[in-house]
Structures are given as structure tokens and as C-alpha cells.
Amino acid sequence: MNDTPYWQKLQDPRWQKRRLRVLEQHGWKCDACGREDKQLHVHHGHYEKGKEPWNYLPQDLHVLCAECHEERHFYEDSLKREISRMSMKDISCLSSFVSITAFDCSPRGFLNECLKAITAKVKNTIELQKQESQVGEQVEQVAMFTAQAS
Image 1 (cartoon, rainbow, N blue to C red):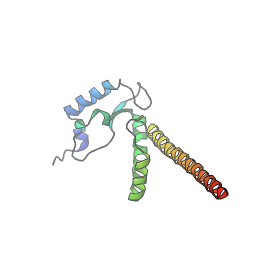
Image 2 (cartoon, rainbow, N blue to C red):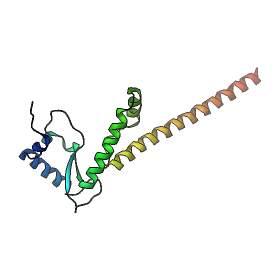
Image 3 (cartoon, helix red, strand yellow):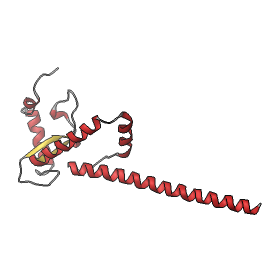
Image 4 (cartoon, rainbow, N blue to C red):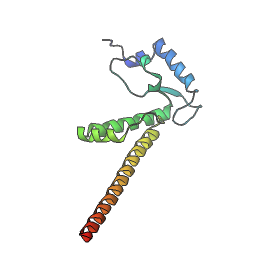
């Protein structure tokens, strides 16, 4: 097992080269706010135990200014804390609401996508309930008509 501290891994030339490529690919601007005049960080969207910082897929690396990076970690930590308090049943229910394939990498963008997904699910549920209600009314009408006909 490699016991090199994470901060030292970020000094490794493999990470430094990867970081520069990511910054270039993202146009040297913050993915969240678009600022080009702030110090930029390359943020790992998630971490995998034992994986080196330079071995992540491009879609797992985000360019964020220092302020957005701090805000992102605040929201991620808050979400992790709340999820850690949830039962497995609640987590399973939550995961069925949120199925995001691509989203704005800012915390607000992520939360907005979560909100959109949940809102769509609620609207769909309401629509299904309306349809079930209409079917129920039609069944009642047919039952009344049948009773009157006999």
C-alpha cells in the first residue's frame, strides 16, 4: 500500500501534467461561475480508495475557482452528513428520484438538478393520481349505467 500523503501526490509530475490538461480542456475558467480571474483548482468529483489523483476519468474532474471549490465541499459535506443519517430504505427512495447523467457541476446546479428530478417525479405521481381518479369516476359511471339498465 502506498502511504504517500495526498498533498505530496498532488506534487507528482503526473498530477501536475494532468491538472494542466484539465485546465486547458475547461478553457482556464471555473465550471461553476465562469470566472477566469481567480485561482483555479481541479476538483475530483469523487474519490476511490487507492486510486491515484491522476488516474481519474475526465468527467470526474472539475475546474473550480477557490470560492466555488470551498462552496462545493460545503454542499458535498452537508449532503454526505444528511445521507449518513438516512436509513437504507430512505436512501433507496432518494436514489429512485435522482438519476442524473450530466449536470452543472456547481453545488447549486447539482441541487437544482435534484430538485428538478424530484419535482418531475412528484408531477408524474400527481398526474397518475389524476388519471386513476378519472378511471375511478368512469368505473363508477359505468356501474351506475349498468345498474340503471338492469
